[in-house]
Amino acid sequence: YPLSITPHYFQLIESPGDPIWNQCVPQISELSLDDLPEDSMNEAAFTPVPAVVHRYPDRALLMISGRCAGYCRFCTRKSRVGTRGFVFSRDQINAGIQYIVRTPAIRDVVLTGGDPLLLDDGPLDNILKQLRRIEHVEIIRIGSRVPVTLPGRITEELCQLLAKHHPVYLNTHFNHPRELAEESIKACAMLADCGINLGNQTVLLRGVNDDHDVMIELCRGLLKARVRPYYLHHLDQAKGTSHFRVPVERGLAIIQAMRGHISGMGIPQYVVDPPGGEGKVPLSPSKIEGMGETLKVRTSSGLVELPNRPVKDVV
Image (cartoon, rainbow, N blue to C red; front, side, top):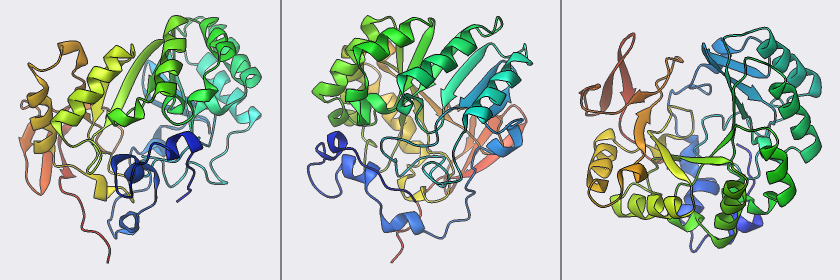
């Protein structure tokens, strides 16, 4: 799997095996012999043209970058992002935009990849201009970990560029309180000052944030930085990530322990995204029909079974 760690993110590491180290430094556990798919979300089945994933009727992902500033060891697309085969040409991106033009049901476009904010300002502005010309596209969202891993990319020029295309929402990915470094808080402030709506999607990770005190500290820090804690993701079932898996019982206990200790707007929604492309399912008692070695979740199309324990480390 590709490796990239920015100098900013590297200096947040305090010791080997700490929560920052675990997110970015390769571990032998990534080579565990699990039978999980590389395309855990079955995105290939919802890809009408190379740069688009169209899973929901009114929403679509537009892939505009195949690389990230830093490669997360738990990434759903870790087998593809940063590889030579995961590149989106100008022609492919334009074909993706034309697909959106031809599909009037799409009102919400999410720019993703890879990290969209690794594009230079000019190409990024051009993509946003084309999307804003589409009458039925009402909302543009950007998924980016740049505020966490490469906060210097957030410049006044970039913020003004994004502000030209409102409404623009940016979902970022803080997973641990130490990631809320001074530079990252400043980057979030610059975005918020330009009217960019900021949300955070945390992944529940063994050895990183599987503790209610850590999660409370993270979410308090996010609110202070004007970033709404949006989702707490149960780990996707992607190959090479099983060592990060936290049993769902632990995730539910963390959310319960947060109540009464932080404002309701600081408690993210705990969700799982089952394989097969059905979409996110809130992890609440009414949706869970069994926990143990296997998690049984009720979805719109029936009962889905998922692994519920981390795999043992390779020796």
